[in-house]
Image 1: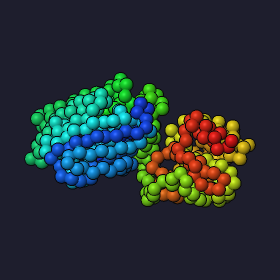
Image 2: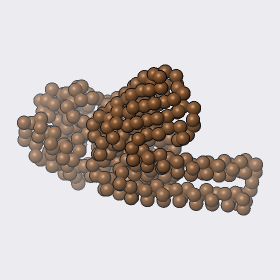
Image 3: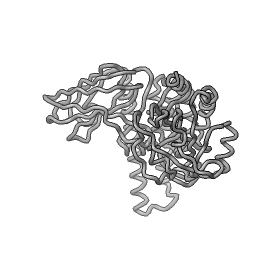
Image 4: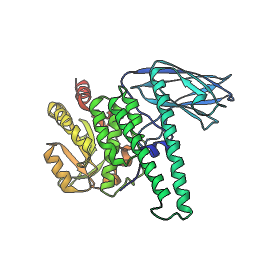
Length: 386
């Protein structure tokens, strides 16, 4: 059993992020940061998975002023970070222009503000979380000190402190889950949900409910897939061990893959050159992959006679389970796997961090699209096959 709480994981990775449909396009942050020397200011997008924060733009702070911009597919949670400071300022891109005012010499949330209603909600949430975190930290420290001083097991004071700690933590978890069930903002729902101090397995059901409420939210989709994959990894007592490289980008040549097919005969992606190929990374144990398979089957049936095919690349380790899933989901195209789970050769080749994942390759072997889901998959294939 793994004890990887999302709150601890995300804080250690330097906080949170994802995205929402309400604020597509370019956004600009007009900033004023008092008390700081001239230096670079970074605009970063943050993620709820184990993906590292991504720098989207770099501005220069001069005379206390700076400006940074980025393109956003969806609304998300971002941060501003000054070059010479450990202070980071979280915000939501809930408008095309966002005003930031801060003072580097004033600690805490009193030292900055962002414009916008979503940022007001985020600020209120962060204040509440900080207050609960402090209470839990103080109680935890006191329990630890009593135990180090030799307090006997079952001591009334320690027992009372542990009971109080659990009660507060349980109340906080209920708050996080209730917020996610009722908030009208997908990104703030996801943000608060993932702060609940529970085992990673406890996030699966709330995330499924959230995905049902906001089915087009890519951040929720990615987070749910990440959690499902990590739970499956724990259940299989294996963790990804292959070094993960950067994902191939649109316009680059797709790395060739050679693995055994269902009949234990080697098969390579390069053997399909001359066709449009969807390289689909999946596994029998991956719930989101199985949920997406009907869309992929529909696309295959619609376009299989029009110079299009699919190559399924599985991260299974159990051949029987892999073959059963192929049969049950009616996956009638070429399937390959080296049955090495997250140690699969495909992981470093394609920079895989979660599945399902896919790339669409043209007849020359060039990647022309990535991570196509649902109706977007059929739309893209129809577009390139015109």
